[in-house]
Image (tube, rainbow, N blue to C red; front, side):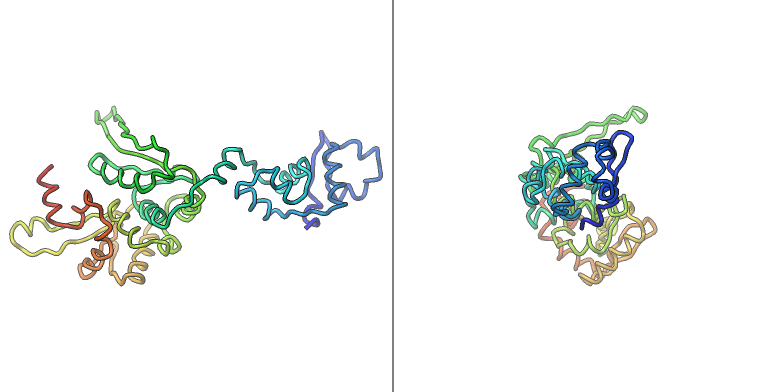
Length: 315
């Protein structure tokens, strides 16, 4: 392990020194005196005791929320020397807030993970590297309140708010309800999968973590049902058409989703000219059976025609 450390250069004023160079000159007091005593102390310590912590172990423990003092104690390395080893390994400092969060954060339940996966497939966005933000319009107030209740133990109590944005150019006012989660390690790992390319895209790893509940949340977010109302009103039997608004994803992502629907649920679908996924008529009943029991009351207009008519009448 120490071999990998030999050629790291520590600087002191205008001089730099590596462990390999120190081994050659350690008995030359005039040269040694040019360097910071902590650097010389570290080199002497390493030559006597070796390097007891690898970069991988350092990062693993640090990211778990261990403080530098705790790591120092665990590996029996003097604190001042551990700071220099951290510098040599190129590990960025973690603040007290991060360390406290790692030690006190709540582990997500399977249900909460399912809801977050479904939401990120839909309207939810990365709020930070380890938190998710949710936004829905006034007509979906009950829906976002449901999400907030499901995630309230990992979300600030005052984060659910009505936001009003004014568009001066169009002379319009836009309202939306928003909330966000606290930073959380489980969420951090989910975000890394969704934003693997820098922007939100879909891969098979994401889809393999999706449950029926996740699909239902995704549909409540981004699903749309064409009921063929004009035909039905004229007494003509029309089959509902379920679709997902996936136009923000690349065609590659959408084709992965289409293949996954077929492999997991035997649901046939296709991509239309607007880059949206359409469930084929023969598979619409299959999709309904998967998501029906998870759809909350205020969103049932997306899967139940009678509810849909009631919503349209009340507008």
